[in-house]
Image (tube, rainbow, N blue to C red):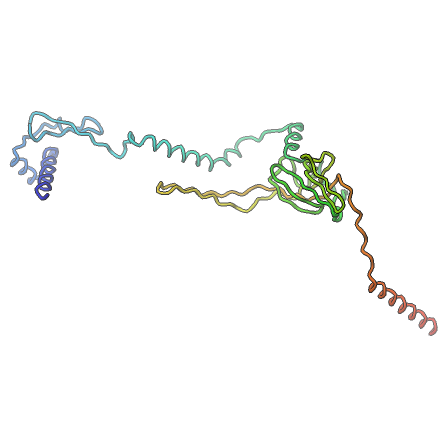
Length: 282
């Protein structure tokens, strides 16, 4: 083992002595002891960025070439690098998507296109809410199951729900939610197949808001790959104002209890006594 190491060290020193244009005294002495002739300078110049000419230690008239690959060469890992570049480009596109979306002009929809897209989602815009409108009614014991987009909600008048942001509607717009799946009250229940054609739920747009932030974290083990992103879903706040298509039971007025009636009789008697005292004093 020691002989092999010494031979490797000697071979490296001889190789340096042959390539060095101005060898030191120790290298020159080593070259003299080994009886290696001085090669011309043109043989020592590299023929390319990855090929060097090295002398043959056994023969002074012949030479052989050795190939060395540098870190700048990407011939072997070209496929892997392309894949990594594609992955990075995808995420770069996602990061710059908002800027690109802002720079592109928004599409202008015709009134017919707006109505058709809104009907596909499950609503229809009537108009702006006016101050003279009395759309907020007292609570009624009626409920409805409606569908907006891909989500279903059970609502009563006066309830507040959050849906994914609805296009073509602004704050204080009055909406009619057409996709009613079910209506119910204390006396009857109506189930659609799948919809109830004559039922409708009225609502008012109160706000366009953002949901809480959700963190999306991606990682690949042992690949030095990590991506962290945040997302806030755009929402629309709706206030249900009325449910139509079912008979609404009359809300009975609460009957007065016996204690309340007795208290009223006592108050009337006390007031009559006061009136009599005032008349006698006069």
